[in-house]
Amino acid sequence: GQSSLPRLALTTESIVLVDGPGGQEAMAAAVKDAFAAHDRGMELWIGVDAEWRDPCPLSLLQLAVAVGDAPCTVLLVDMLAPHRTAVEELCLKLLLTPRRSL
Image 1 (cartoon, one colour):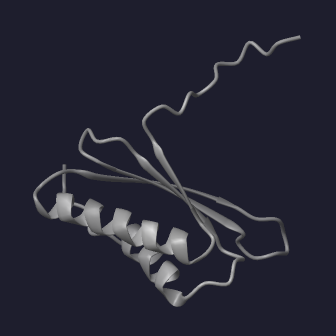
Image 2: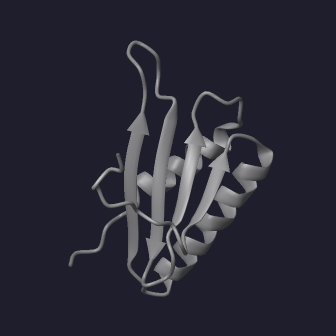
């Protein structure tokens, strides 16, 4: 039978798979845009989820980035893919963003 659970429909979100150079460039652009809007005084929201299987290392980092009322950008970061340290630096920049008091 069909499940009675509600389904989330992704309509306006931008989903970026970060598993190589193209995804890294898209992630860098999304982070740059988010911080530019944040610097103009807009609220920056970051949601985090992670996937792994013990004893393996972190395999997938999911970062949802939203600024103000703009559509959310979801970054699916493949942590096992060979990529430069720039991706890790972008992740840290998002996760260590100073928060303004509400």
